[in-house]
Amino acid sequence: MKRIPSILIQIGAFAGLVIIVLVPMLVAENWLGLKKPWPMIIGLVFLIATLGALFSRIIRSQRKENAITKSSHHLVFGDVRHFKKRWECSVSGIQGFNKIDIGGDSDSPTADQASTMLSVRDRLHEFVSRAIENANEGFGSEKFSLKREDVQIESIYLPATGIGSFDLDFAVPLYQKNFPWGFSASFIDFEIDEISDNH
Image 1: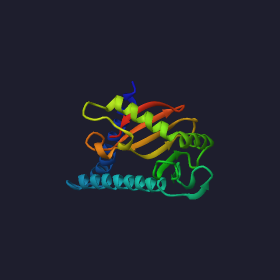
Image 2 (image 1 turned 90 degrees about the vertical axis):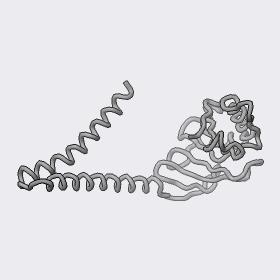
Image 3 (image 1 turned 90 degrees about the horizontal axis):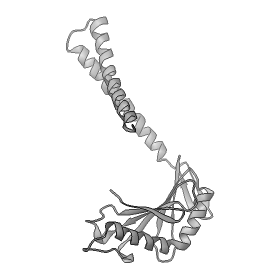
Image 4 (image 1 turned 30 degrees about the horizontal axis):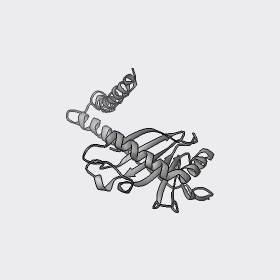
């Protein structure tokens, strides 16, 4: 049942493209009296123009999404870059870790995100160890077993609501063949919910 809306959208999109081509063709042939191949050429021109306009609109929308709307300083996250529907920052100074990129839903850090981050910062070694342990159970083999020094934490993602919910993204340089894009550990209520291979 979940696939039905997707199929309907695809059918609707295809029907829309056909209409964009057919209507100008019929007008050119029946009302303007143009002979072949001009109706077909006009229909294709309308199609190209429509697709070009849609593509241009998508590009403009993406640029707006990725445009920094403002910058601010937060007591927990430091210097924050604000976007339309998300925010980003980088934190350092956590013992044993290099600079870590942090991002979250909402255009500004929420109280839940700040509370979660304070706990993550204090317990990050514990969460990383748990993530590695679960990754070994899910992806490990006789050929390799991940150790703390094998992984690098790259980023932390925080949903807008839900204290204790966050994702840790890891790179695994030593095992690029096994984890070309690293792996992620998703936590809910500070407990691991899922380990996934980033691909």
